[in-house]
Length: 293
Ligand code: GDP
Ligand code: MG
Image (cartoon, rainbow, N blue to C red; front, side, top):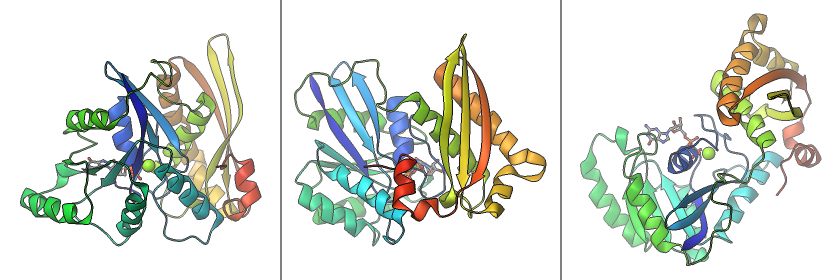
């Protein structure tokens, strides 16, 4: 048997979480177009007849280190380069950006097999540019493999999986074979609600938003969840609630449907919105909200 850890790294928005969900065949990491969608390290566990690959999804590397939240995100992303067996580096175009230099520097230090996934080939019009890029990439780093794929459409994912298992060390299963993530249902619930918020809101609110589960209990087959949505200013609270409560209602309905799928049972969900000034730039507030290393 093979078993080991695979860190999924790369800039924000290249499709790391989408790729993880498709590899697992189940949604465990939330995705959206907004920056800061992934804020935590999340383990996704894939067990096959060959063994077990434990994927570590990470927030992308964030250029601005000033705010406490960004420092936290960079710590969470940075630690992914140690204590793993394979690095899966995702880019979303056949080209390297200035921010990719940071990743290159880290993989050169890490001394691990690195697989380069060139994602979103479904929207690549000119496939001719791929070959020269692969040659140029080889000059930058000696990759274990370079695989063009589409996480969203599921293109070339079997090839990625086969390659990954080749580079995992021999070993017994680390987690029980039916376990898909190391995160609790409570955590998954807060993430699902955050995803629906990110997808329903404009540019201004996402950074200022977090979700805290105040109550999670199962009674007579019904899961009761009470969640608190924290924002930084009263203007943001008004946006989250929407005219006549419309936005919050829609977020609640969509979250409940996803939660019922995940839990495989009925869910009663209550959402509240509260202003907590400056929580995202306050180390102590961050820790108390679960942003701990
Ligand atoms: P992350 O920040 O790297 O985790 O990126 P996400 O997984 O959250 O994805 C960012 C955006 O890219 C989302 O809107 C995804 O739907 C989109 N996306 C991811 N993979 C693909 C792909 O293969 N093709 C296309 N067209 N879009 C994708
Ligand atoms: Mg992500």
